[in-house]
Every structure is written in structure tokens, then in C-alpha cells.
Length: 228
Image (tube, rainbow, N blue to C red):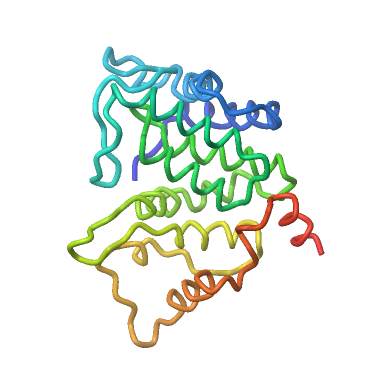
């Protein structure tokens, strides 16, 4: 896992502050680019000619070994994603997850995409009154990144399908008070649970059967449910 510079770490917290200050703001391309500018400004990457700070990528990139949107495709895909997302009048948490999975698939910036995704998630949790602090993301940053990759990864020849269940486990812990064991080895496509290791399968089953409430209910209702 790449370690962040002091500058980028400080910039990340400035992004959190910016998100809190604009919690009710509509997500736009302009706003997202401003966040990226704040995140990457003054970093070593920003001194490279090929690195677009505060703008979409100039060169193809990948995430977890998967190809992402080509530079010439990014603007159109981002516009379509934001238009669809912003026209949803009543958002459920699964809609928020879907947005971020698709954002990760596009990977619009040369670098800083997953960290930006974490900032967006933080924004929506704060907007709807969820009690989550940045430490929760920092503690599980690698798991979060890998869960986003698994949410986009398909290998149909080997019967491997994209799944959001690992993201749901993470956010079940963060906002619903569940206690799923978040191990990066569980996300590996070749991972096979041991006979006496039922925790991961139990967690998956609970999600698939809808036992952990309702990440598909409207966010304002979910907050009320949690506070009961």
C-alpha cells in the first residue's frame, strides 16, 4: 500500500473540511475537480507534467489490474454518472455505494481517486447525520480500496462476479453497528474459507438475506432506524 506524504495527508483533512462546509451542495464536475486540486496540490505528483492536478487524467490508468475509462471517455462518463445520481430524489445507501463503485470504475483522475471516494462517503454520512469520523476510513483504507476493486471485478470464465458485499460489510460496521471481520485476504478471488472459518460466510449470508437492515431503505429513514 502506498504511504501518503505529509502534504497529501494534510490536504486530505482540508478536503474533509471542504466537504463538511458544503455538505448540502450538489455534486458537480467543477466541485469534484476542486476537491482533487485541494488533495493533490503541492504533492510530488503535482510536479509531473503529465499529471493533471484538479482536472481529469491525461494518460490511461488502471486499478487493481483492471482497465478504467480512457482519458477521452472520462468527461462524458462523469457527466452521465452525475446527471443520473443528482436526479435521484430519494437516495438509499445502496445508491451511494453504486455511485462510488461506478466512480472507481471510471477512475477519472490520474491519482487520488480512491481517497476522493472516501471523502465523498464521509460527506454523505455527515449530511444525513451518521456518526462516523475520518479515523474509520483511515483504519480500513486498504480494505476499502480492495472492496471497490471487487465491486468492479468480473472474471466470468472462472465464475467470478463483481459484488458490493464487501463494501456492505464495511459500512455495516461503520453505521449499523455490526462487527464483521474485515480481512483483506477475504477479498482475494482465490480465497477459500477454512472449514472452521465461518465468519466471512456468515457475514455474506446475512447481507444477501437482508438481515442487516436495509441498506436499501432511504437514508433519512436509515438514520432514524439506527437511533432507535
